[in-house]
Length: 239
Image 1 (cartoon, one colour):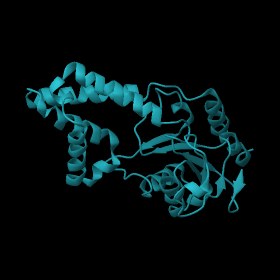
Image 2 (cartoon, helix red, strand yellow):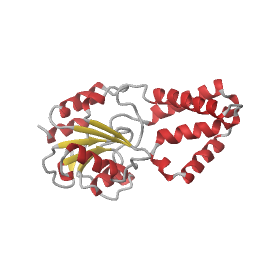
Image 3 (cartoon, one colour):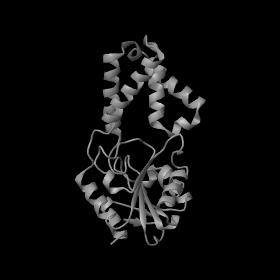
């Protein structure tokens, strides 16, 4: 552990999920491939659309509704719905098909288990202080086996702007009925997690499981309170 500023007593913790508790990139890659295979099986006309066209659909959707940039689930559903215009489906059929495809992706996206080591640390922390999950993604915490450790889980959405916006941090502080300075946010992204939480008045812990943690190779606006070398080091703040 490397400390960049003094850490005052920690009364609660908030956690990012993707790339903080597990390496998310291969999971998303596998789920995306599974979705593409499903589309090819059921909707060949939509599957024939070039990748550039799918990307253009997504860009146009965000351009028309900036809030979709914070809601990965809704954005994926709307992208599927518009891509399915290539098929001979009426509007109800297209909505049903888009929902079915999204549900298929969502299950595949959450079709993994968090490591026993991480679960053990979360269990030990949760026995000492309340924990809240704050994620820009849409992983199913029940399916991946960590929901029991969190008092609440906040996913970015149309009504919850994505980090680094302070909305979800403020919501967590309100739920916990604590001053922001008493909460330690744990995350991998130095902008979305560390800068976002710092601006909201939280203390911050930086840990990433998907890459070497070298500040020389990161975009750094503000240093974290602490740089963790393992998740278990968080136990130091509650023991």
